[in-house]
Length: 382
Image (cartoon, rainbow, N blue to C red; front, top):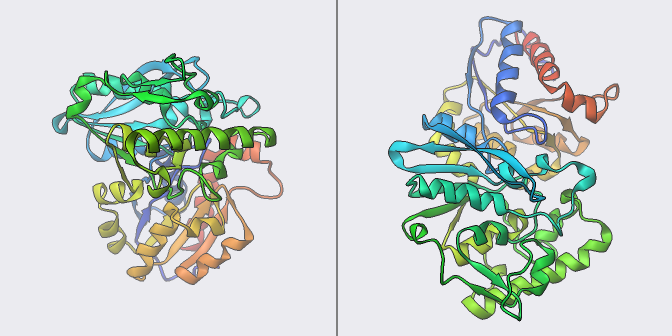
């Protein structure tokens, strides 16, 4: 749909999520702004990068809360050392950590992805560092993970032991969970008792069953032959938790997110699971900014019908619809079934991926493609 000239939206809110494995939401917002400004100097553009617990959460929250960044070397998903960054808000003693920094898809080449072997150990090392820096609240975003280790890698770093039937520690990965018989939390790190961990996630999947953690196994690199093994590991972990703690993980919404780390941390570390989007929405005053804008531009890496179910893009669209604000969607790719968004106040959908460009090149050239696309959109509303 072409926006007619004369209906000039002066105040434009650019509020995208990240483009997974390409750009974080701050970068997406910046390139959209650059393109719009090239089209017209008259636009009053406000950038509000978003996240839902996945890539970009650290940068979005640390920027909004005027925090600082900490960079350190930790164990990567395949146990090779990687550099990871997290945010600290010193005055409030808050740490903002992304699982993806230490155990994310971006850290493992597609051909080497194997959720039976990947671990969240580095996530625990980030948490430990934050606790030792006197942080009393840790917001842990768990999106974009490459792991299905139920968080045993991370939790073990914090003093919890996962044991087999001979009281030896298991492998700290999904394969190791097959041998798990009991959990020893008697030597949990003392400082954790005064630290609150908040899991930021918008995924509602439980641990097992048709809508369990296995739904995401394929994108983490699971081959067909691995599925029964992963299923067995998940069920074994669930049974051990039920036996020791009297809690059925499948009664906890979100227990299957990010390979089960949220549910495990809730039970073993008394963590709290909250909507990542709602946390960020409140901190950046998103609803107020939407109400004060004339046009909203939002989007993420891929937009399809699945975005209707709890994804950031749909939540932004819903708020805009409430205030009768027009929305333009920008994405890496948009499927035909995303046309359903036109029912919710969306007036245009645009993708950087076209028939003349491959996905690989679209990811590589995303900054320029975004700027060019935003420029084109800007010219339509000038």
